[in-house]
Length: 271
Image (cartoon, rainbow, N blue to C red; front, side):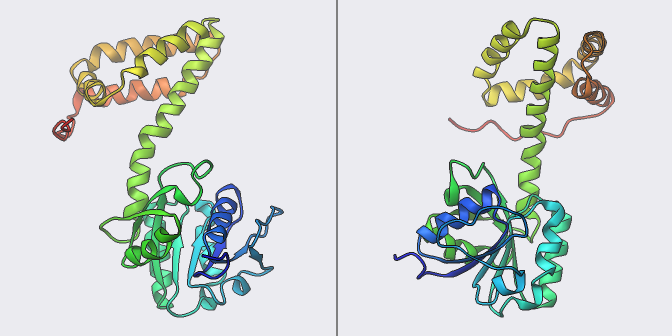
């Protein structure tokens, strides 16, 4: 397909993710317009406008690639200018509640709204970044973008369902990163980082479903002993001058486990 002869797509946001998606869409044959008030570059083939209402005038699809805190403004600033029959897809990492609110605003203008959750980093993946999409027009969005190289998977549920799945996973992925950072700071303060790093790497090398299940159920079975252990870890980190933010949270979590129950875990996956 010749660049610029496919669907007309407008992007709100030409930051790191937006610029990569815009470039891939143009190379795949889409006509790409964009709006971004920030002083960022404009990818080849992208027609950049000075006002959001101008950018969306002829768009079949509008993709919002803003921060979650700016998602509502991105929609409102050009809502009345978006043509009938277009689809607005919000790719921000906003909460399910915000996505639902945005869908309601779009519905007042009879605009189809799709909640999109990017499930991997855009750098290195570009348009092929795996994504979930929720809303009545999710299949339509996937049908338009997947032939261009996107990997959008529609999921059941209203707008907010895709964002919810991503944020549920983020509790683990971002929480794990925060724990690792705190451990690294403590290891450096104790002048023992090389040993700690190697030890943590060996532990994570064996992180499979059995390991994950063992961590969850073992924490419940041994909550009192582990709470005492992590209380001692808090004291050690404070002595090293490292803020035990995540370690204190672990103590609080174990306190809850002493008195509370765990939900039943799904059955083991078949290999």
